[in-house]
Length: 78
Image: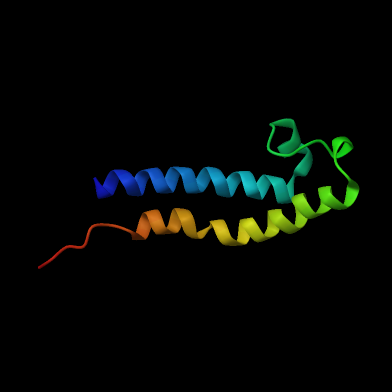
């Protein structure tokens, strides 16, 4: 069961990390696939905050989620 949870955390963590990376590095592509709102529909300052500031902070924080799935394995007792 722990292995299954670890695999789920890795998969979800990588999806979140890729989405946040696209939002920060390629906001036009992220808008095309539906991760961001179009720039025309948002206030310019809010768009910059959402794509650049939140994208960078989330990208810097979400790398720990897939890592926790890799490191969170069942302890082996000798």
